Length: 157
Image (cartoon, rainbow, N blue to C red; front, side, top):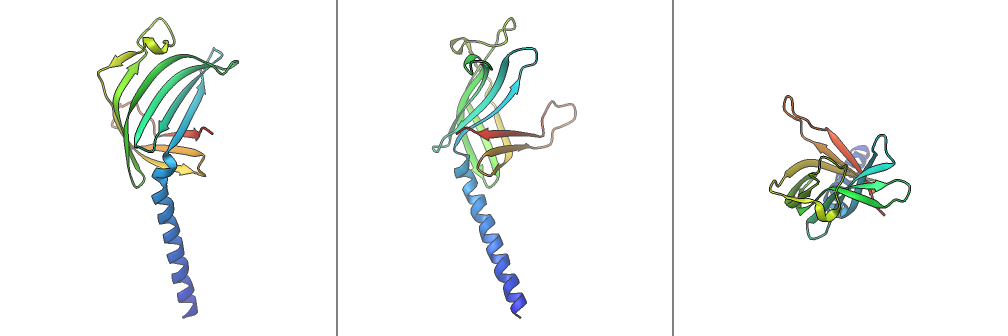
């Protein structure tokens, strides 16, 4: 009988703790998250950065950074919009986006980005690991679609 009581208490403790963590995920999402990669053959880094705000709005930018100075040298993309969470699902809805549209250059100045008529919306499963990493797990793609399975971002301190 004691063993059954102990197992029941442990199960209640386990499930109540995991529910708290799941409920906190949307609050932990607030902040700035980034993913960077080197641009082959250059001294540049491409930086993808999400800034999720407490009012459920976000800003997204894809910038080119000079590795030696850590300064932004140009922009590829910039957007803003709203987001919503439902458990571990995240929906990101763009309200406005601006694109680099110059085939002769790797990047544009911020004021040269062109307003896009296209507004995207993505749905992902998200998780936050140790309050330091944000992982987007994308839904499966159809045949011949260009897609990724997941993306990992680091929290900007």
